[in-house]
Length: 289
Length: 270
Image (cartoon, rainbow over all chains, first blue to last red; front, side, top):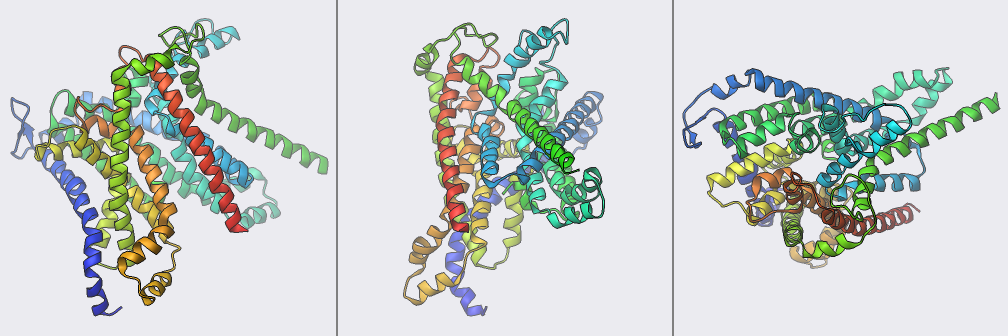
């Protein structure tokens, strides 16, 4: 393309691209730089930000209470991701192998709950899991347990809430990966005498690993921040990193420390996404588009 | 031998069906509770004590609940419209032109998609604080637009990927100006992408809790925030009733539109 053509196009280009550029700079880039900056600041007596350099907030990350919340949060997120993989993989496999009509139908019903408020869907788990809830009643009735179990407001309930909220985000990338799978490779493996498990372990699983990786990022990263899940399902006893951040901004008004905690989340996100793109993953998969 | 194989495949079929059924039970059990308990006589959502329609009437006299829902719709409609305008312009420009800073915009668009929502929420809160903009409906709309723009850009860009530029050139040769090309050719072609992006942005906005939690004031509460607020005293069945109505409406819209999309895609293939 010649220079003259480019110049002629400059005016419409500028008109089309400046709104998005301005928006991204003013509402994403600058705020993130500001968050990074105040993570090195402290607060004064009125909870205002005191702009002088300190590493205090980063040192506070090693405080035993903070470390405790971090470890609880990581356990919740790792287990939630693992359960999502176990549930999503077989489901995505069936989804990829079924007829187009059934596939469309299953996709609709997978995404449909998303159109209902997620807080209300989480809240209604109380009716099912509560001490007088239907699941306890059923388990006592069939004689599996003698007395109702304490299921709500436990770490298990928080994990269940995370899996419940994030499962579709694991299904979609795995489904895409299985869908792209070259079936002739599976047939070749079968022809060479491999049984289903051997084929699965040596052919299908390695080829669909990028999908599992993408799904894992889309479950693991949000689950560190979903404080409403731990509020609704854990009842305040099972704090995750998101609760800690939210408290700094809404209750204790320690924005610099909240900023530090957020920077740690960003660093973790960047590390995960880097590992993913380095291993050949595409960013678009993470956006589910 | 053949019989053995056949047996195995029916067993596999049964297992895969049972597994999928369990997944759907898991996904829909809480929704069933919401619908069932919207008809419950008791205001406590513990046991079903009797059938009534009264919550569906009561709902209309619950001012704060309806107000929060109306606000949610206003915010979703405004932020989606803004995001569509900004996002479509950006997607078309990025598809059509090579320019300095394209890589930067592209990278920045992935930021709101990939970083945890809470980080976006607090950084928006911080930026409103620096600019001393009071938190309310305006900041809420700005915040929702911010996380919606990338989704619009991505869905429109996906649609543009298979777009033949020569159609535009032909129109220009025939004397159409840029605006006529944009409104007469480009937009109709990318319309499915725009609709998909808008639907995505709208639903994300309606369901958003985390970002709204940080970017609105007490005067501009949304439906999810209202739900969270009433958790402590217990959610009343009228909120379930409203949710059930929303669900019914979206269920019909989604199923019908998806089935139409399925049929047209099938026709296109033929």
